[in-house]
Figure 1 (tube, rainbow, N blue to C red):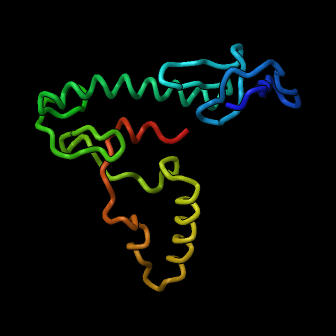
Figure 2 (tube, rainbow, N blue to C red; figure 1 turned 90 degrees about the vertical axis):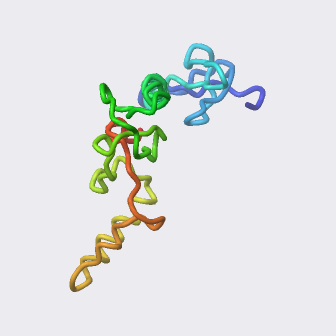
Length: 161
């Protein structure tokens, strides 16, 4: 953070920034904030009080807590699914925990919350292009890196913030 920056947290529509001396920048939006308008966490996880940034931090903490608990099952060579003692088989592409085959699935490409903006634009282009083909081309909907990777139900439910 550059010295002499001011807090840019805005408490409402058409309001100016706070104006106090900023202590650090938000790790998500990179806006400088003061002690009053943010949270300084361990390991430089400094997050401003903006709603989206606070939600990201809350989601990260919940996911980390869930992942730590589910990882205990993997240490016993068991599926990380809740109350499942089956042998682990497939790995989730997002959280990297291992699950039995009944607790992982390919991502739902209709669920656009898992896609970045660039991927959404590419998918829109591919859908239009496929509509022009006489028989359609399902390979256009496949990931360019190969077959779809598997994700667990927990990661599928998280979406993107």
